[in-house]
Length: 93
Image 1 (tube, rainbow, N blue to C red):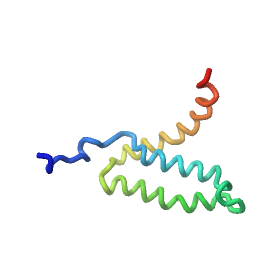
Image 2: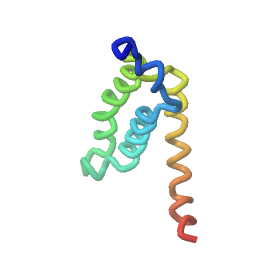
Image 3: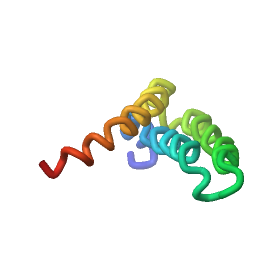
Image 4: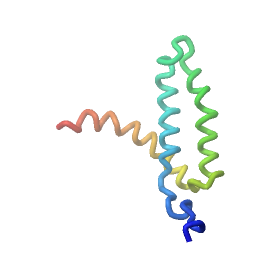
């Protein structure tokens, strides 16, 4: 019985936080790339981009997420980027 158990059928999640974290990495690599490479601000973004795009593809290819899960993760990341400064300002109050 244990050998026929498929965790992919049970543990799929919505939204894909793999892709949300990857999108956050891209956003912050675009914004703060000069913290890594002083003279070439966007270089870090271009280095990270192929890795993150391969993560998007691999989560579907390896059947960890469905495409709507990935789309929701990508949409979630910019919302969190906008919401985080407001939460930091108002949370202690």
